[in-house]
Amino acid sequence: MEKIPMTPAGLARLEEELKVLKSVERPAVIAAISEAREHGDLSENAEYHAARERQSFIEGRIKELEDVISRAEPIDITKMSGSTVRFGATVTVADDDTDEEMTYQIVGAHEADLKAGRISVHSPIAKALIGKNLGDSIEVRAPGGSKFYEVIDVKFG
Image (cartoon, rainbow, N blue to C red; front, top):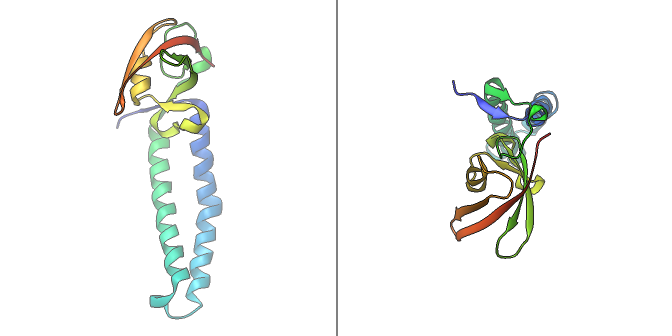
């Protein structure tokens, strides 16, 4: 059973999602199925089929979250320091062409959220950043071609 690296905050978000699914979403969909059954003929009952589909999604997500949480290996990034990029680091890079700055936190695959600035440790940019130091240049190979960045800040915690 392979352990999944994760920040404590990421683990807490997954545990909260699981709690909501079990205590709010699951009972609500069961009630919706029961109500839809009372409307008669199930073969032509769109509400019933939609509720069953939602139930299937919820049960699948619960199983997935239980598996991920059971294999989670929280890594306390507040105890980390230095200028070398590794899991948990919040890294600011500057595009060599445009000088545009971007900040990312390198996190586990199940807690990645690009809109929130959290990228998976398995993403191309994170793979290029791991092991680099403040001031280093990196090349990120992407489908649209290679991009070059300079590491301008590394923080932990």
